[in-house]
Length: 240
Ligand code: ZN
Image 1 (spheres, rainbow, N blue to C red):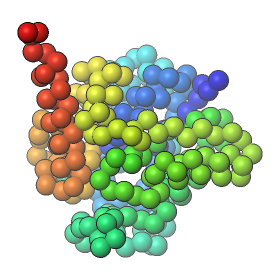
Image 2 (image 1 turned 45 degrees about the vertical axis):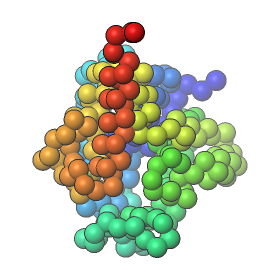
Image 3 (image 1 turned 60 degrees about the vertical axis):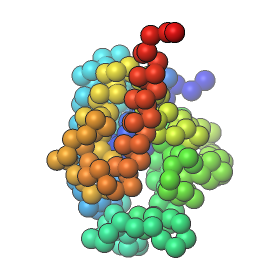
Image 4 (image 1 turned 180 degrees about the vertical axis):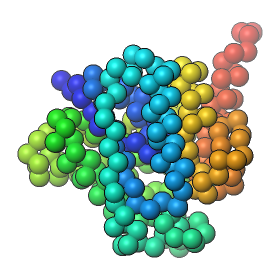
């Protein structure tokens, strides 16, 4: 019986939905993120804003929400040249992966998260990785997660469970999951306080939240929200 979890929490839509998922299931939930010289501190600010808003809007979850961990991973910026850590433009590479891809980044995140979970007595690692996402990051795939779960459990001699509630759903379904978990209040919180835009834009406000509206992350979030809204409108039409 699992009662404790550590959520890989970046302050974006996906990881915030995963945090709500964990808070609805587990008695004690902690959060972790990694600072590796992202160009935009808005991402790190968004984390703290989301945690604060969840505590104030969901008292039953606030009681379960424990420590937040932020690990310095500036070394990642030294081993990779990507548009997240350098001033180069976001683009798709010939191999079909965006140039934001840092080889093996998520493997490193999970290993460090498991080490913290071990020390903190937390049983489940919850992460918002997704195979239906456009990016196709190989270190976010279901097979990779299963292999990591086995490697971490063997290597630390402790049975870890890696949960990926978003693995097989699209962005519209991610909004729906948020509504199922925390109602309109959680959807509104995600719109207002989470951050997804690659350009760090917090000046343009859309129905789906803040962002440039143009980058692949904004495009995905916007499309997902449109699908979610359309299904809501359909459901609210009078029968017949
Ligand atoms: Zn954007």
